[in-house]
Image (cartoon, rainbow, N blue to C red):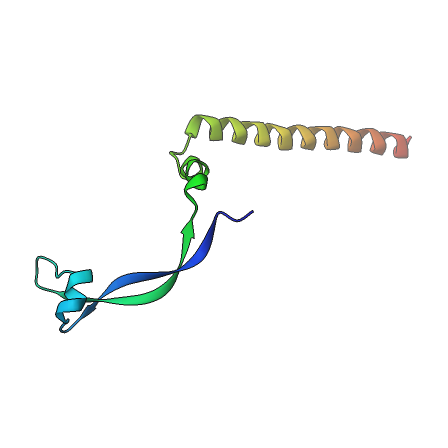
Length: 96
């Protein structure tokens, strides 16, 4: 599923001096740095995908992550105890 596409875009890059036509597209900044437009490729995301991307980049939920960690840890410890108990039973049967 594609969330965007590769497009040709204009970006303003710093240069020593810019012509009046270049300054029309890329005005100088407050420090007097001149810029000139340059064509490049960029990956642009579709506006329809904005909500999904913002949800993925949202704030980290420590309570939810703690719950998942607790579930995973208790599952591992529980499996260890079950495996250990099965090993004890098999050892008892083998020694008879």
